[in-house]
Length: 275
Image (cartoon, rainbow, N blue to C red; front, side, top):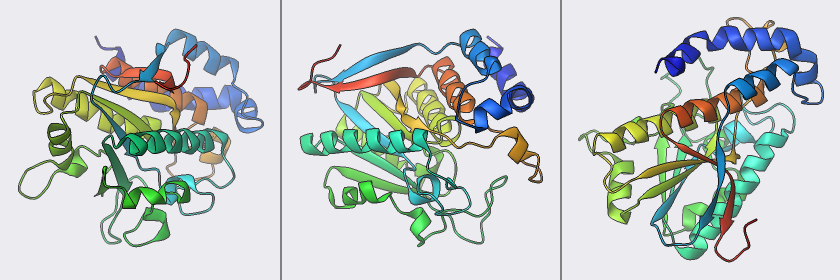
């Protein structure tokens, strides 16, 4: 199937067209444009519900839920104003983290963390080691003291690659093996960047037998978010590519599902009723 690589190739043009046709509705009030509605219908994402019961060894993976991407005004890549999609992502991630830690189930948290003299093009300097940007959001700082939580600082987009040690071992792969994890539940930011790249790499590693006994990678859509850069703003920034939030969030989920990830829109605990 060639639809996934073709979509990746033409994505900048698609985003520009969508921005030109729907920038007012996307940037003022966050209403979706007719073009966005049409594309979501043509590229549907199948979403189900997940009930966490403990019957299957499940690990929670938190991707970059840090100040530099989530806290208003915290840095070059942080939101400039309060963002509902990011706020819901943080709230849902905290809900899951508290449940997993209450059960002492395994949690793996990626933290974007860069050295000032090592750029990451095309992005501006962000989440520099030792700064507030490169810290978990306040609502998740308590994770650093939990015995069931593994924290991995990474200096690249793809957390799987960022887990490789100098001796060739992989911290994430070791975490999966040690905890005998069969399912990873992935949440965080950005849906179409770090979440997508990590999920695709994990799926490829699973397929190559590098993550035994991992079976499924599940992405929780409401606990994921991405940034918003409408076309009229992108046109004022050199070399910027338009990045309408609702659409790119959807495309990230679509791409991940096309690579084999499962996507869920609701996560329930075995102690609460599911609809």
